[in-house]
Length: 404
Image (cartoon, rainbow, N blue to C red; front, side):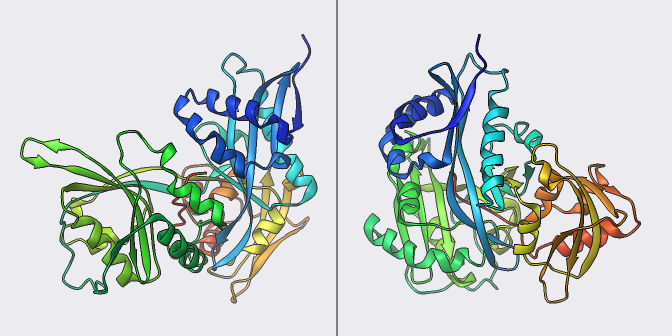
C-alpha cells in the first residue's frame, strides 16, 4: 500500500474538501453551509491528504488578524476545517496536515501566529499549540437586577433588520475589536457568517438584532414553555459595546425581554463585566471551557508584535520539536514603554519551557507563574518566572467570541 501524500488544494477540490470536513464531524447539518463556505474558501490556504486519489484528511485557514496585548494587531492564520475521514484515523494523517500547514507558513513567514477552536482539548498540544483563551457559558435569569451604582445608557435600544444591523456592526466592530485582546479582524463576509441562520441549531429561531447608538447584540430565541407559562431561552450570538454604559443597556434589553426565562451566552469572556453589575452575582451561572488554542509560528516575530505590562530581561530556553526553527535560547527583553521582543542568545537560560506553554501565555490568558506552579515551566534562576510572567500579563482576560 502506498503512503498517503499531502498537497495544497485547488478550487476544483472544494466539494470533496467540504465533504471530508463535514463527514469527519459526523454532522450532516453542515451541508446547509456548503455554498456560503464556497464563497470564503481560499484553496491556497488549504491542504488535503490523499490515499491514492481519495482525499482522506483536510485542514485550512482564513487569513485574518488578531488584537494583541497593548491594543496592537498582528496577522493571524485562523485555522479551521481540520478533519480526518472515519476509517483513516491513527495513520498519522493529522500530523501530516499540521506539518504541511505550519511549515508552509513558516517557510513563507506569512503569519507569526495561528489559532483555532478545538473539538477535543487533547489534540493540538502535540503540535505546539497552547490554550490561549477561555470561554464561559454564561446564564443569567430574566430581569436579574443590577446594582444601583451601575450606569445604564438611557438611549433607546432598537430592534432592527439584518441589513441595517450588518451595516452598523461593520462600522462599530473594528474600533471595539482594536481594544479587545483576542478579537479578530473582519471583512463583510465574516459578519455574514456570524448571522447565517443555516448553521443554527434547529430548536432556535431566526437571528434577531438589537442596536444601541454605541453597541449591538445579535441573538436567537429558543421557544420553551413551562407549566406556568413561557420560559424562552435567549441565546446571545454576539454582543459588542463601545462604552460600559452601552454594554449595560444592551444587557438590560436582553434580560428584560418579554417571554424570556434566561439569557445564555455560549462564548462569554471569563471576566464578563455583567456578572459584577448584578445585585446578586450568584444569579450568574458560569461554566468554563477552552477557547482559542494558540500557536507561535515565528516566536521572534510574535513576541515583538505584542506589548508588555512590565519591564523584563530574561533568557528563555524553548523546546519546539514540530517547528524546529523556534527551538533554542531567546532573550526576552521588554522596556518600560511596553515594547519588547526576543532575540537569539547563547547566555545561560533563566526559564525552560515548551513552545505550547509560551503560546498559552502569549495573549495573557494564563501566566507563566501558573504554569510553573503546575510543573510545566522550569525556573532555572530564582525570580525569573515572576519577572517574565509580570511582563506577559494583561489587565483583562483575552477573549474571542466567534467560532471559525
